[in-house]
Amino acid sequence: MCIGEVANVSAEITYTSRHSVEVQVNVMSENILTGAKKVTNKATLWYVPLSLKNVNKVLEVPPIQYARKEQEDEGKKRYEEQKLDRLETKQRNGDVILPVINPEPHTVGYSQSSLIHLVGPSDCTLLGFVHGGVTMKLMDEVAGIVAARHCKTNIVTASVDAINFHEKIKKGCVITVSGRMTFTSNKSMEIEVFVDADPFVDEPRERYRAVSAFFTYVSLSKEGKPLPVPQLLTETEDEKRRFEEGKGRYLQTKAKRQAQMQQAAQQ
Image (cartoon, rainbow, N blue to C red):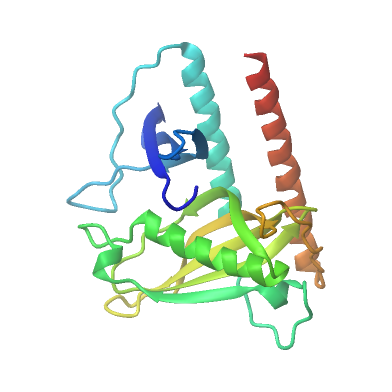
């Protein structure tokens, strides 16, 4: 989407479980000079309702009515898939990103980046917890810095793979947003981003992992055309393992998109 275009954002509840809601969002841009419209972003968001009196209590969700039984079955499948993804992500929550002295170009250490942010009132909801969108913006900034350091070109976000909010972040926390390159294909890069919260003001609690996600970026020329991405040079066994895991996610996403394109062509 470009400066001067009009954004039309639509959202719809597509599935409910006992304690969560799936919301599918579509963003369409409109060039007001030519009238041309195009879909620029799609996302699936999962929300959990909390009590206003006790923010640690999860409430039950009123069920929605489905037009067809197939819609409910497809929604349940997506629900189970995101639950598995969250469990897999939690297993990586002990990972930390350590500084590297004099790293070589195109290595993980060369492009890894961090950002520190003090959570203020403007970042939070009325209950004093950080808006999800604030955290996502900071994560995208760090991922963009990692991608730009690796490529030294224009870069844009291509997709985000399941931002998982593991714990709430309160007003007054200091958050550290850290990103590192995990995988590169010929024309894309996967960047893993963590958010660690340090409640140093009024809670005697140690730093904890609050959010994690994988961002995919592409490299572009000045004309906006895709450029080849420099191959990531892995040095340690952990980096090689993360590269293979990223390759698996890349191939899985590629296969899913091809299936969706075939399905759309048949309709």
